[in-house]
Amino acid sequence: MREFIESMFDREKKVKFNYQDYNTLFVKEKYNTFYLFFFLNNENELLELKDKAGELYQTIKESKDIYKVDMDKNVTCIYCLCVEDEKYYETEATGTISELSKKICLVEEDLNYFKKNVLLYTDAMDKFASENIGEFDSLCQEKITESNFQDYKKNNIENYQYDFLMNLFIKLPFLNFQKYLLRNKKGYRTVSSFIDEEYNEKKIDKERIINEMNQLEGKIDDENMLYAWLDELIKKKTNVEKNISCEVINDED
Image (cartoon, rainbow, N blue to C red):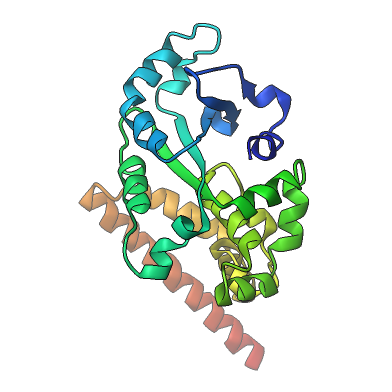
């Protein structure tokens, strides 16, 4: 799994860093955000690392070769753990929260020092990743389709490849799912594309709306300024309607 995830990053994004005997990968992404991957051997290491968060934080700060002030609040730890199928699907199969799920909640809900995500995967998913090192982009283009999504909903165990890719987008915040959306399918449409379409269909002046909203931001805390702004807006609307009425009458004449 490490090789598959590491292949997502260019060499210049990788940060040289080791923590104790853990298998780690430290990378820098856009906007000075950092991601520290741990490739774990067993689920007990999840809680171990949770308890070592303070020590890990200090280790990073004391690593003069790589430490930057931006790291203080912009490091996300991602714990990658391969588990048996039974444990991976246990909560879904039994309808109860499994012991592993409880451990994951403890880790992910602990925001001390770092944000923490747990990426679970099965042996089949691990093999799938190993067979496609360096192919993440092409995999997404191939697998993220409406038909695969429908197959996944019917049987997520058989469609573990789609399941794995979706988990990557959920647990790895720097990935951009929108890039692979099928924009011609309603199920995959983004809110922004829907809004833009409405603007175009109804011939709404988007720039004017944005300008009005920006003006409102500066007045919303002052009641007098807010009422004055509303009065001005109503006057503008009334004048526009009058002009339209005059144009209609002139056309009729």
